[in-house]
Image 1: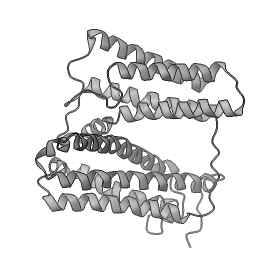
Image 2: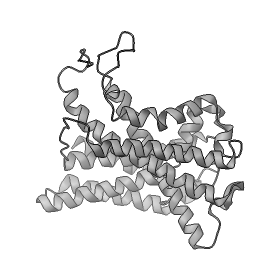
Image 3: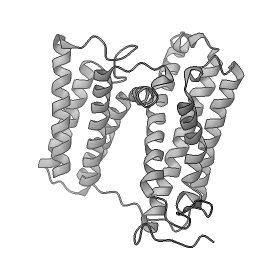
Image 4: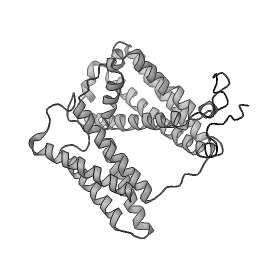
Length: 304
């Protein structure tokens, strides 16, 4: 019940702020381009908050039979997803904040608003999970589908780099990136997906002084995997939808942005493959490490 109450309180507070803004008090600068949210914007955001509040109240007050309970949980998952997708531009704020030299402008109030939108979605998901628990059985080994997801993620990353190489490294958004950003970009596209499926992502290898044979902290691998996959899927999923809509309307997606249109049709789907592969590998890692960390998380284990 506490999780439902927390989600309902957050949704109502956020909805109240959006109503206030829609009544003529919208700050002038929330995003460097366009509105701060996507998909559900303006009064649509208010309606989304209303739908979430109604769903949460039903979950709190109604104790239906199993089929109805499942349906309510499904609606909550869908509404939570709508919040997360609407706040997809938060990915740019995160990059611009973590890597100040990336050239991405950050508007603090707009970033806070997008974070609140995504936060509402995560809280609604949390409430849905508590309302209708989904059991994930542990895995005794890493399955082939997990390896497929991890290597698909690496393939998506390499495709994205190849698209950049094709138009020149000085002609893409990464041209203004710092060494920190580019290092993180490289690690998220190679080391992270492979760590999710290979043993060295669960047990420190022999060549790590002082840690060899000990369990890798679960959060060190799982949390970045979930965060990066979620950010890529939300941001570039919306981006691909916009591209398709613009092309169907006879317009050039993103005005081509000074780059060949083909660049975007390769790069954006590549990001989606990267994100989807990471999500699959992260799911397997969560299930694989559930039992692995179940007894003694930090004791040395066999490194054979």
